[in-house]
Image (cartoon, rainbow, N blue to C red; front, side):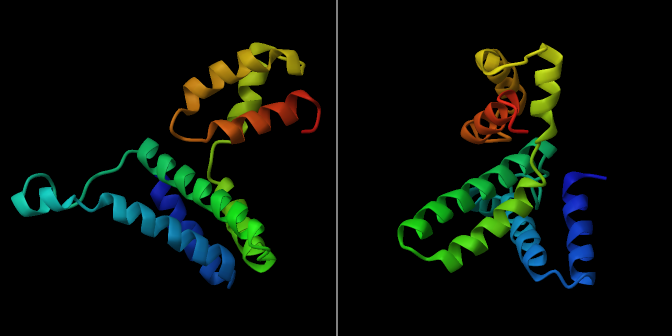
Length: 153
């Protein structure tokens, strides 16, 4: 099952469960992916290329990571404006989106390198960022690695 198919299946499940927040968030993700598949204006005018772009799994993960970043930025801005209702909404969406980003990879790399404390964070981050480049934000990866290495798992 492709990543996009998984999102579509999860959307169907959210609809069956009447989970409005999850349904809305997954629709937004699928819409962002759909928009990325549409050819540029230039391609459409000249007739070059296929009617729809075929996105790779990495492209789709980049879009999901971008949507997560968009939510984090919104949380920061709504927090400054003291709009706690909107902060809570964006945080709920972010939590759903983060479930689709590679989180287990941090633990795998830490085990693979035999890292056991925070002093080895640089080594872990170097290896990890080469694997998740474009799929996850460096700040988020750093935070997860720091929590794991300092025993905050």
